[in-house]
Length: 141
Image (cartoon, rainbow, N blue to C red; front, side, top):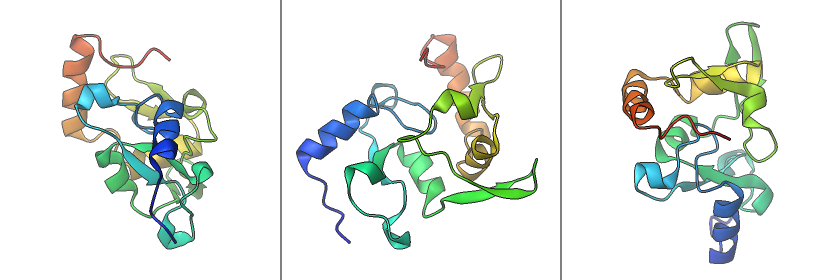
């Protein structure tokens, strides 16, 4: 159960993720610090340190995710997996609200991820409002 990630693999993942968090889409340039390398299936749950199980995550999203891989969807009253930024397309599970300050889950996976990662906690919504005012968010792709 190794945590070591080679520099070559780190750079490859950073480029694949477009240097931004797979969940909230904040970029490294926007937050002024590198993203963390996240195990999509946590080591504690048997995940491995291999390309297929790694992606970029901002510290905030990574800390809220912890070792969780699923959560409760209040709309369907069922458990659903968290979003996997390596294998799923963000726009199929999420959208932005009209003013670009909140992430809206549009599928069970999207809603579970928004709730679990607290993507719309008040402090980040206030911050996004500032970023929107200067055109930095939401990202265009």
